[in-house]
Image (cartoon, rainbow, N blue to C red; front, side, top):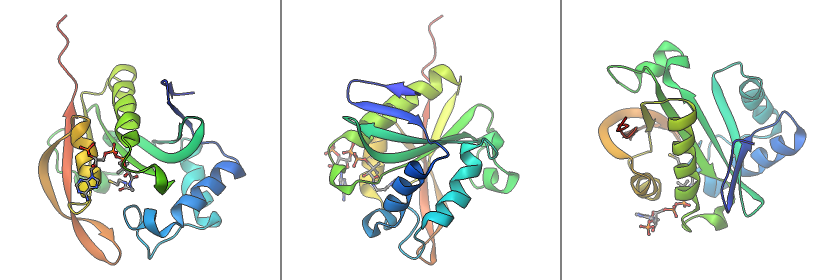
Length: 190
Ligand SMILES: CC(C)(COP(=O)(O)OP(=O)(O)OC[C@H]1O[C@@H](n2cnc3c(N)ncnc32)[C@H](O)[C@@H]1OP(=O)(O)O)[C@@H](O)C(=O)NCCC(=O)NCCS
């Protein structure tokens, strides 16, 4: 288990059909796809396995996790060190240094759990984990500029908008602008 708080549990995604089916359920839901992946690009089971199995096996430097709210599996998150990304992907963040910089992507796949502060709780727990356990100096996240709920959630967690990333993400047939948002580790007093 990665993280357990009073209501949230975050664990590594497993190489088994139950986890793949959860992912298929979420990544074929039109409401989720509108904000994550695109309605023109649902992930059915074969695509889910093709995409997530290499991550689960540690072949891509991306750590895939499922999270639970009060013991109900509700969503997915992944984190990765920018230095583990292929050069072209890393350059898309337009940062001077990517040393000890991590990125997070997430979605709540059970849409009836949106807007209840759960995303903020999950992200806050992951931020704490990445700073303390992985010695990150900075964490970035890159929401679509039109995804106001995600941006608000990230601001509540302490992320600030750093710069606009023009045409950063191909979403539903168009290259769309995103915000690069970042949070820095608090300087230790010691
Ligand atoms: C983004 C996501 C993880 C946030 O989690 P969440 O639990 O819904 O977020 P929270 O409830 O913690 O916070 C959302 C905030 O946005 C606000 N909000 C909701 N809709 C909004 C809108 N259209 N415009 C502005 N703010 C909005 C909420 O009121 C809340 O702020 P408040 O606490 O000040 O009232 C979740 O909504 C989700 O998975 N969405 C679909 C996929 C997605 O967008 N993933 C992120 C891709 S970058």
